[in-house]
Image (tube, rainbow, N blue to C red; front, side, top):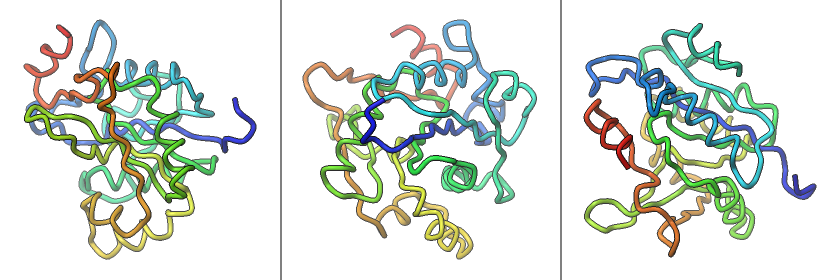
Length: 207
């Protein structure tokens, strides 16, 4: 680990309702023989810039997630309040200056995700860095659940969510945010493809 890089904790967001999968727990669905969350965990362990710890944010089947061998924390806000509730939980339990968030349903994300987000945050003196990726129409759009955050933003996020705020971009727009496009030569166009339905999960497996 580069001694100049502050410690980074990875947070896997697996706390959603899975409503587009019929309400099943998405993070426990199999992808290439292992639960999606476990595949995501392995992807985090292979990052070119290593993480110090990995946490899971889940709201159901906690013992199944705990069997993956890392700390599991449910939302502190009731009612499946969305990714920002996961951000809040991760930041509250993070012991490093930086927190990386990734969703559980995008198992092919880049192995240099952490390194590129950190470099952009550092060079742009930003409070957070967010990945952006090409979508089907060719436009490169932010992927707000792929985020590197300074833990000192916790107070701001507590205030935002206590005021009823739930939209990631409404909160991130209050801070200096570096947008990092993953559309260079050599970047996989499918790196940020996610599985909202079981059919999409099968399509991902076939890539």
